Length: 106
Length: 232
Image 1 (cartoon, one colour):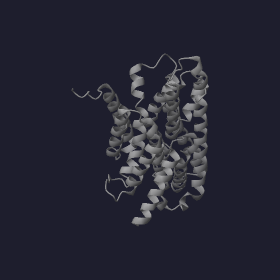
Image 2 (cartoon, rainbow over the protein chains, first blue to last red; image 1 turned 120 degrees about the horizontal axis):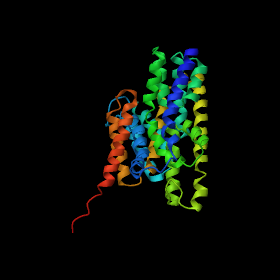
Image 3 (cartoon, one colour; image 1 turned 120 degrees about the vertical axis):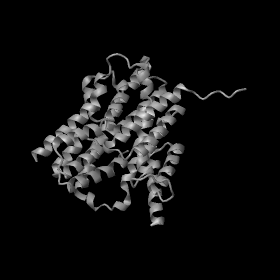
Image 4 (cartoon, each protein chain N blue to C red; image 1 turned 30 degrees about the vertical axis):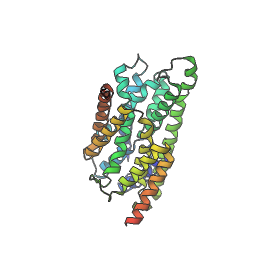
């Protein structure tokens, strides 16, 4: 039991250290313009990278055919996100689409 | 966002229990580490009896991407007191980052100002933004704890065919929309998405870091080389 607590504490510490790393040094002088330009691309890059694998290779292999229901549901959800800009609506339509396709195909 | 997080906490709770982690320790991991993917990987390592140092090292590598988040939000937090920075850094999960940066960007476009307020007028509103960060962070933290606890007790009984875990990628899809504002950000998103898909097989979520770095590089290049004006 003690082993679990020590390891979990260690996991928490390294995670916190990474999250705090740059924030802790902010405020000591301005961010260089080149860095600021680069940081602008962190949100679009990271958010897409977090979402894409679960949609394009849901079973572990790349699947761009109609048998990939996650791809169809994800594409419809992306379209909804583009048009409505509503997160709630995007998730609702995406999940409903996934369940419908699953019910039709199985 | 909460809709996306909830199923993951459920699944994590159920898996942690299956891996033989005591319920209290599984809950403690959610409150101390507060990082979905690292907790999933850690749970797998616990299950196979991996040494503690390896589990901690793996957590570090899996969470390296948070250094990018730290750099990304740092300009907005630069004027805060140290205790605010210490608190907000703890809450900076994937999901909190996604919500907070979206909020900061929207406020920025509305007021037309940069991260650091230029005038007194901006300042009053911009100075409240860390409260949004705190609110989002605490709400996500609470959701993560509640869903972990639920997962420990009922998670194993939720049928896999519901695909509840798909709600999280959908949430990120929804948040990409406000992050893509011009040609360069669109290029960054597309490049990162492609690399993430191709490199997904890499261990320790290294593919995600590769994808992010590629996306940032492509974004910078696209910005530097605007489309040529059509010849007359």
